[in-house]
Length: 193
Image 1 (spheres, rainbow, N blue to C red):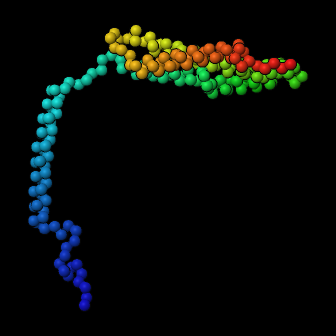
Image 2: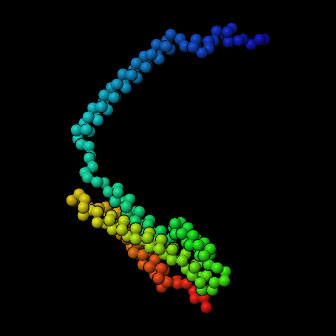
Image 3: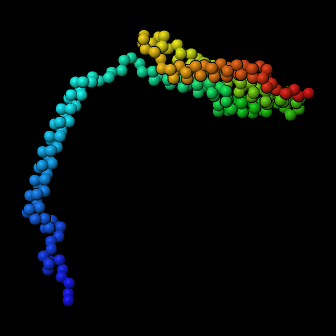
């Protein structure tokens, strides 16, 4: 009772397993698929030609407003930085604090120490906030007046106007707060008496 091996049963493996009939059937199938593909490709090409005749390509006329949109977003971002403060104003304030500490002797009065160490840093922060607010105001105003110098009859997108007006408003508020902080009207230094 032995088992027969593949050679004894006559089974063929790999490339030998295909017969002449299978080879011809596969070739006929490939030829049929190729003929079908060329007919389908011809129909698609004909449909595409019809579409080309019906619809002409859209060509952008004039500027697209991408630069104006970017300017509006930059204006709003600068206005936000003017209100919240940025790393530049933080570094500048820390620098002023260090300069005040180095320049003030330990025998100086408390009022002098407070002014030199904290007052100058506060004014530096207010100055940088004011510069960011002024930049937001200028960029927003340029974006808003740009259509007057652009292509006639092409209106500015509504979202660009809205964001630019937001940047201008943030710039005005930031500039007002910066002036009030710098002049010590808003949150002035405490008196050291």
